Amino acid sequence: MPNTHRLILASSSKARHAMLTNAGVDCEAVASMIDEDGYKQAMKAEGATAAEAAETLAEMKALRMYRQQPDAIVIAADQMLECNGIWFDKPMDRDNTRAQLLALRGKSHKLVSAAVIYKEGSRIWGTIDTAHLTVRNFTDEWLEEYLDGAGEEIYHCVGGYQLEGLGAQLFTEVRGDYFTVLGMPLLPLIGFLRDHGVLKA
Image: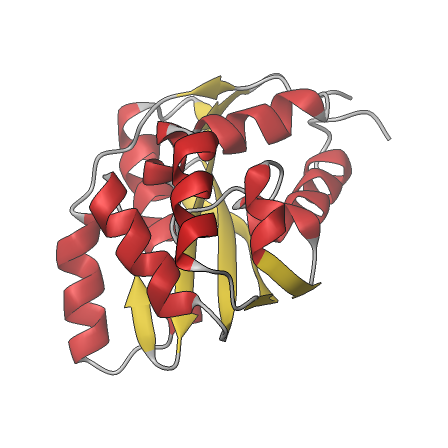
């Protein structure tokens, strides 16, 4: 029998909402406001891995949204970018985007995406997936053209790129799931929703 609970994505991410809706998952996107920077700093100081940080942040978003929407099934996700032990955040402006991409130039980094689902006060599912990406040794001139062409949307993307857009030109190799790179381990998530009766089998 189909599950009649409302489905809420606890996120302000347009990319994550688009991933779900494009895959036929009818959900409402509502931002779950937590102090991400503060929690990341604390977890880094405690020696947490990028995967542990991503999972913890996803769970905190899900729990906070569940407390606001106790009648809903809540999905939350988080993504961490790590390069040589350094955690990167969303750059938020052109100068920071340039600095992040220069720091990643010619190097490999990993993107860790975590997703968690809450229902009726409990975590009922969660998963973590990691993708590995290698950035080519682009020129400074090309970088400025990229920043002109990619648009301000990349300021809200960790690392300063969108693989589904002009950012594809940054890489020589991408190993891992495409949806994980975009910010959410989509296939196992929709598999769980199907098994749980939210989606038709």
